[in-house]
Image (tube, rainbow, N blue to C red; front, side, top):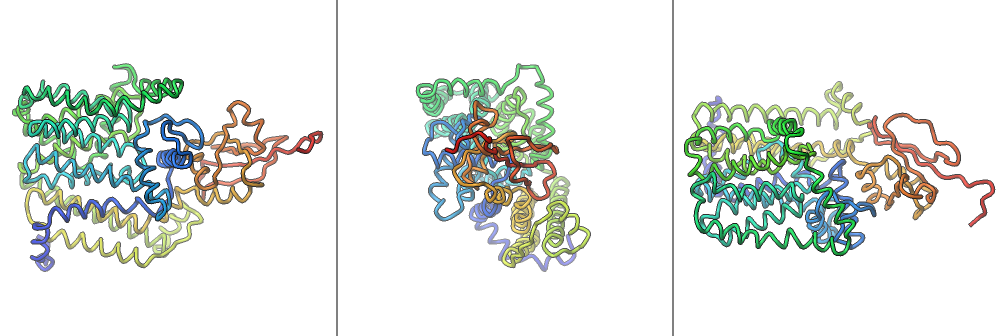
Length: 558
């Protein structure tokens, strides 16, 4: 016990935490979700390109085929674009469009917290079900994608929904079938085959492992789930096939091409994702492994272990045979890991509880000290050495000190410290401490440092400078070397839909050419004249040049 800690223990707060636990957890989830969703521009790489598809959907009114700045973009099925566009259309009048569409994550990530709670209640009883969303929220890897516009948030929701369906199959077949079927359908329309296969595989093999699911009504459960999932899986691809057969074949090739042959590079991909999970799912995975070890002799009859274990293994197997190794693809694994870790809590020994509790306190105290230290350096220039370092990293950043943000961040920091002394001792206390630390730290980080981070990642200033150099609006602009993120943000900030310079005739038809290069290159020769050159502040990699075609001497005026 810390000397004098009893003075910070307030019985009224302890009672409030116990009596209003559900409301406090909902408030924590909301407090964790909102900071970082608003008040910043779209960031590259993934978020900017996804936002570009949502913007094109709203601008064009065409919802069948995803497009980015006028070009086909079939990397993902369209459900996430549809829902984000719907939220943007609803809230765009009150908020900047990029902030409005990002609020779709309140549905998917917030829904995942609720569904994990319900699944935990069916698997382990309602006694500790309230802890499951806090365990999930505490995963380090969830923080960044949950606040960005990426379709994997919808995939997280679909896996949580399917886990709830499988967990409740023994209670009521119809609601459970609805949940599993919708989970499979949403996974398919969010990520395609790679998102759906783990759920289908899990539902098929679970009775082989879990004896408690070997019941006659399980077949009815699977059949009803298939009926629910069928429209989600069939209708959009069928309409795409009927209206755009060439695009359907392109989309299907993308779906099947994302998998490699079994055994070829599979081990390396699996190891890569296991390395990612070592920090991505921290601190949950050690307790998930502990739960499996403790229940290894009663795995077959124990659905609380079998269901999340099969979901986890199936997801890792599909990731292992995939070609894509992006970290965000590991997001669905957090659902079964959180459910497994949740089951280990009642049997934790006192030494493990105290070790995790004090580690969490030390970890977040260090993070709070770090964020306040660098905030002082960036916004006030103290200490001077750190301020010079941060200025070299992002030259040109002009601090905007917000008293309201500082006061709020200070209240959150002190509030977390006060909460440490008012959480009742129990095996769940270190998980609650960690989750509240994650909530408070993320909110403080976004309040104090989002302006500096936005300056580092935003293209708004550079594109504004480029727009001033354009001779007139509405002219054809060709682009060479620009990625999807840059094309999307040019469309958003400057209403420029680039034509690819390497496409048929684009470089001959456009009088303006925008080039991105990663290394110094000599200017283009005749007939191109350099009219603008720029880059983002502090970016030493990306360089942009705008050229204008000079008219030939013998050209006739139009």
